[in-house]
Image (cartoon, rainbow, N blue to C red; front, side, top):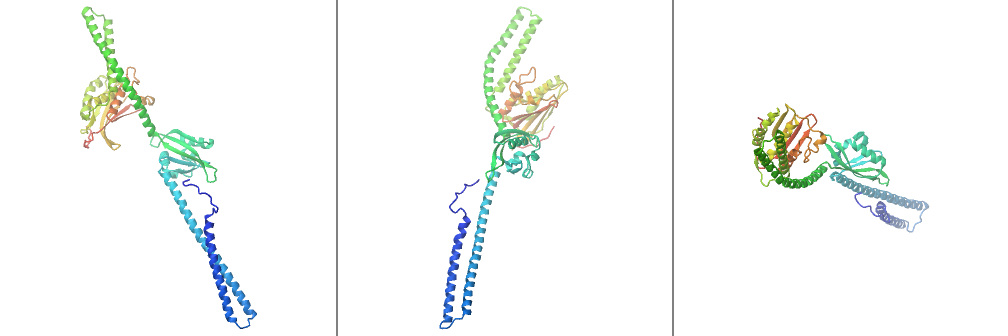
Amino acid sequence: MFRPHPETPLFHNLLIRQIVPILIIVGVVVGVLLIFSLEHQSMVMVGLTEGKTVSSELNAAVGQSRRDLIAITLLLFIVGGVGISAVVTYLHYANTKQNLEEVKGLARHILESIPTGVLTVSEDGVITAANPTAETILERPAASLLGKHYDVVFGEGHPIQVLLAQILHHGGSMHSKEITFDSQNGEVRTIRISSVDLTGDNGKPAGMIFQLHDVTEWLALEKQVNEAQRLTALHTLSAGVAHELRNPLSALDLNLHLLEEELRETTDLSSRANDYFKVLNSELSRLSAILDNIMRYAQSRPSQFQEVNIQSLVSHVTQLLQLEAEDRKQKLQVSVPTSLPDVQGDETQIAQALINIVINAFQAMSVGGICRIIVQERARQERRWVEIAVHDTGQGIDPQALVHIFDPFYTTKETGTGLGLAVAHRILQNHGGRIDVSALPGNGTSVTLSLPVCVNAQPLPVEDV
């Protein structure tokens, strides 16, 4: 799997090719020694029996001695050959084992290093291998995966269990199938799974290999890119429409006032005519406010930012909105630390975003509701942030509507324009910050504005007042 298959040579058994030459050499050496021994014995016998009569007993003893010498020589040859064969076999085994361990180690390091989750499942549904990435994606350690059936690991009805059962029972490969499931910390995760057949050494099917990719963050980033492209086009269109409508709307407003003044000078207006003018002036003012919001939404990032004191900004906004809260018979409660680091941005735009959020909170609550503004400094993602959280005691937001609350012109109110939150979202984006909304039907809504602290700001103690 990790190295090419060697070509089969004429003598494919390497061990035999190593042993046979050694045995031949040993045989030649032993044969030479045997010949020299026999010759030496013959010379000794000739010397001892020269000029004498040799008895039959002596000839028999000499013959037996030669046979014993040959037997001992053959025994030495066999023992030497077996010993040498054993040594060569052991060395070959040790070398093969070392190569096998190196290949296994290489395979293990590759599986542990690749950023893709790898899970192998046998034909009977038992998990046989899982690399660390798969453990992280599945949020399960290897001890709870290996050697266990996938039904036991994931449980009946789990999206992964359903998918594995479908593939293993019906066969065939699968490419980039996306499934979602709830992680252990409550977040919804999306993983992309591909599968291929696993073949054993004998060439027969041995199960399936599953490749796992956690694409949750990638899909979120893709969504942000698509949304940014869509909003960029919408910003351009909004700016163009607002600019084209501004002049005729101003002309309508001016001429309506002139017409009203001229009619009042020449004749007494009836109550019905006064109502008509009141409606016209009110609707023109509403159109002007809508155009102002569109221009704010389409406004590009300011070229220059200044240091903004959040404590004074929140104090100014609450003074502006305190009277409206009293008119609605609602309470506006504020908790701001005595010392906060400054943020870099446009003070007017940040105030506008906060005003939009608080007004939305007012409109979401009934009489007697409470709107709380809580400001604090936090460290997140190796950066320091100032968070302005606005909590209301209203009816909350439906989860289906929560997905679209930042879309321009999307509103659940009969008289709303759907630009308040869109403008706030746009402002926070321009400032390198973020806006988060959490809400459940009947439990109120929490909107948090996060702004990055100035780089040169010093950490200060935080004390609530």
